Amino acid sequence: MRVVILHRGFQARGGAETLALVQARDLVRAGVDVQVLTFAYDPANWQGAMEDIPVHEVPKRHWTDLPFAFDRGAQMRHRARRVEAVLRKLGPDVVLAHNHPAPAILGACRIGARKLWYCHEPPRTLYPRQTSRFLAEACHTGLLSSQPELAGTLNRQIARETANNRAWRQGVTFDRAGVSALDGLAANSSYTRTSVALAYGGLRSEVHYPVVPLEPQPHRPGINRDGLQVLVQTRLEFMKNVDTVIRGFRLARPHLGSAPRLHVVGKGEALASLTALVKELELEGAVTFHGFVPDGELAALRRSCDVFALVPWDEPFGMVFPEAAAAGLLLIGPDQGGPEEILGGGRYGWCLPPHAPVAMAEALCTAWRTTDAEADQMRLRAFEACRLRFAPEVVLPRFREWVTG
Image (cartoon, rainbow, N blue to C red):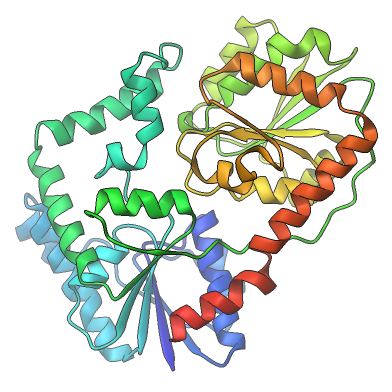
């Protein structure tokens, strides 16, 4: 059997790309002939990881696209014809698409292979209300006054839909037609499954969780009684809502021991505004922005921290939560999206409204007051719950059966 994985780009290392590679390697171990087809490929980042998996590249842009420069739908149909030509040469039994626009392009290809989509989330730019529904509600009720960048981005996306913008309409038409032609769809969480149903008129999908390596990492017992050590690890984007963690930490700081500290790991567009917020709240001595941290240093930082806190808006899954559980951290997450599912609605950590710094402060104070024995029990309970749902030996056999039929 031959399976082709179709993904929009293997350039920088990202969660979707890493998961696609893990799935590909598992299929290879099962004796499946796996090939990768992509619009962009960076050998410096991926050649070693791909090893013996052949990679075929169809450039995203080609000179023959010029006649379709002002028609988004025609442009995408032309790109699909180029993808179809390569797929016909490869002769796959199954094609598995990942991120947008790969699923719609696959659906537009007239080939005999089974067409599948592993959905990380529907495209937010085309379906802002359906994919960012909690954020849209908060924006509508005026809860984003302190986050103008986030509200502005969402409002611009919704305005395109409301105005029936030509490019938006062409994109949605092509996307829905392509997705409707697929043979199977798997969502990475129940939250994403609902987003799919809302975006595509009730389209049904089944949940296949992402694979999370869950080898338990050593962690010191109890809580650092010199001061609570809090970790945030994420891309510093406005949707990740790190400012709520910072504001909550500011409120809780007087009650978290003599030397509490907030450690922020990651890089991104929101760094400047987050740095300004720390200065405004006079937290320069208590908040450290670590930037990108290599794996070895990250493991040591996790061991030194007590709590992982992050309350992103409308996060479809959230790999960092089970990873933090495996590292022995107590978990604070949002009361919606994929993280709420990972945290079992509050059974394996604290679930908070993303717009509530006071609730964040209360959760941090509760974690600080937790006895060492209770903290260790909570860590073990969260890790076991994640292992039973997301470990490779749990996820991969079921996923393999879905792909190979």
